[in-house]
Each structure stands twice: as structure tokens, then as C-alpha cells.
Length: 396
Image (cartoon, rainbow, N blue to C red; front, side, top):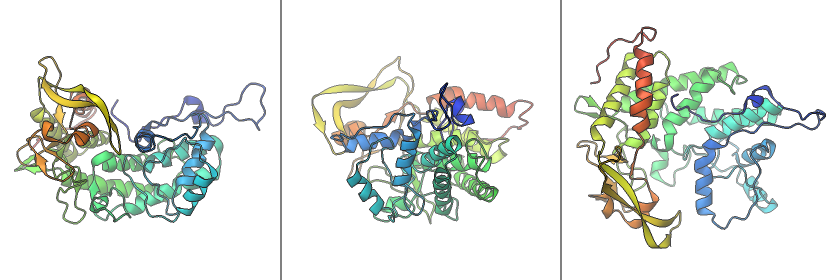
């Protein structure tokens, strides 16, 4: 099935609350494990930056302890700082520091953050009935709704100003499709959000409508031909703009896959949505590189950088039997692959990217492959079947 936003799923027992061991009393609950998949980015970034971390970790079925960690990290305004490990056992000194940071305005949607915490707390609330988790989830939902720009966009980190790109409308790291997918699930009252008050569900539905309209507006056009989406847009001008210095204004293939998958999740899609999807898939087909593969070549010795340790170099090489690959970024006008270094200057090819960024960033990948070969045909069958009822829609 199409990719879901968010991706958390509890086991079947979790849907019905607490499971009890045979012979145990109600004072000895055994809770169902809740998947931690959507914390993957946070966990990876934490581990990359804290390589000497010796803290122990809770098991996945220790949902109370994990949920309490999530509440501890939550800021007073309902948001969460980025890249916090949810299963770490936090010592008293750390706990005191985190509590002192409660007033900070560093809540972020970066690295698929905030909406995973809301969903996890929601699952825990359904299993335990503990209103602390319900309140934490609702505070996170309100933070999300309040963070939306009037034009429908969501920023990387709504209240942080130390970097200009924090305020940009952001598609990178699934921010726009991820947040809107979460709000869509809330608006529809999907599990585990049936407890959310109707007033908040209605606000979520309004936010989704505004966000959907903006997504269609921001699809980059080359002449009269729609393509895909940039990674970031200026919140006022709505023009594609720079994220981090090496993320120059460009068409973003990886990020656009998530946008298309989000749009394909719209039931009974109107013509403009159908057209946006078909135009994007057409663009993916036009800019693919066939007969090429990204090859990893061992380095003589590991090179340690701040955010990663490089053990292999990355080289784009001819490989006649390989499937298609896509560049991460393409020029807004010419569709040529785009590369840049941390100084913000473009370079002609992957080999010209400094080793740190060449090994620490994904410049090529197969991100659209499943979308193009599996998800899109399934979506077409659903939409264009007699039951779907969609007529022919021009791509451009």
C-alpha cells in the first residue's frame, strides 16, 4: 500500500488496551510494544553525535518509561527539540538540565519530529488511560496547528531564528507531507486519534486544506510544464530558496517522492491533485539515470567528522545492468544534476564535492523507484477504475 504518514503501528493487542498475563492482577499490566520506526532519524542523529554515550536503554515494550521520556523532552509550548533519543535512561543531572530547558522555543519538525511524539503518546494513552499522555499529545497537536503559516506552509523550526532556513517552508525531511499527513489522520479521527476533541479535528481539517492548496501552488513549473518540488521555499515570496549552504535552490527528487505519496493518499482526488501527481511522475521518468550505480569504495583509513565517520568513498559509475538512479537535486530550469559544498558554491559533479559531504549526504539514490513502478500504477488503477470515476486529466 502507499506510504503512510505517520508510520507508527501498534500490535493488535495494543488496540484494545492492556494485555494481562495469565494469573496476574490488574495491578500488573503488560503493555503492547509500540513501534519506534519514526524516531529513526532522531536516534541516528543522536548516536552519530554522541558516540561515547554509555546510557542504558529501555526495551520497546517499556512504553511507560519511553512515554515519560517524551513528556520530559516536551517544551512548555508543546513542541519537541530535534534529535532526542526516546529510549535512553536519563540520569538525574540530565533530567535537571532538560527541565531547565522547558521554556525553550526550539520545537522543530526537522528529521520527522514532533508528530511522531504525538502519535506515540496517543498510543500509550489508549493503552493506559493516563491523561498525562493525552494532554501531552494534545499540546503537541496544538503546537503543530499554531505553527502553520497563514499561507498553509510549515517551517523547519517555527520559532527558531538563529539560522535563516529554520523559517523557510520546508519539504526536506518530509516536513510538509509528514505534518500534513499527521493532521489528515487527526482530522479523519483515524486510530489512534479518535479521542481528539471535534474542535481540534476541525482545525486539523482546515490546516490540511490550506496545506494541500499550497503544495499545488508550489509545484515548480518549467514554462507551462509542472515538475516536482524544491526542498525549501521562502515563507513570504514562496520562491525556492537555500536550506543549508549545500542545499541550494533546486528541484528535490527524494523530498518530492514523499509529496507525491502524500497526494496519492487523498481520497477522491480533484483534478488539480491528479494532474500534480501525473506531472511529477512524468518528471521522475524524464530525469532518471539508467545504466549507472552509486558505488562505495573503501578508504585507506576511516575519517572521523563531526556528524559521521567515513569508511567508504562514493563514486557514480557505469553499470549497464543496474536499475535507474536519480540525483538528489536538479537545476530548476535545465534538470541537470546539482551538487554543492558547505561553502554554498555549486560544483559540476559528485567527485567535486568534498569528501565530508560526499560521504555524509545522499546525492544519488533510488528513491522514486517504488513510487514509479508500484505505487503510482496502483493509484492509477484506483483513481481511473469505474468506481474511482476520474476522467482524463492533462499533465500540463
